[in-house]
Image (cartoon, rainbow, N blue to C red; front, side):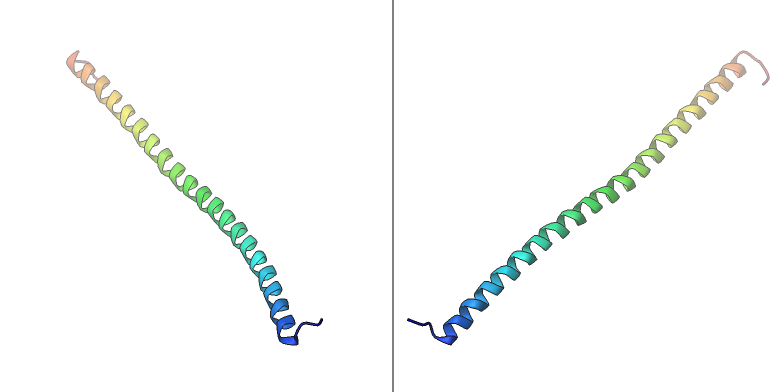
Length: 81
């Protein structure tokens, strides 16, 4: 018993669409995973630069405070620098 040509065409079309859907789904998963990894890396780089800048500024502030403290101690002892 043969199937009608319309049914065979529809069946083939459904199979082709399933294969295409599977391919597109795997490409989507791959691209979103790669894009997320790239965004995470970019975020960490930018955050790292800002954290380093903040650390550098804190160190600079501590050095300036120390110098002020030493100058104040010298003034209190009536010394010249």
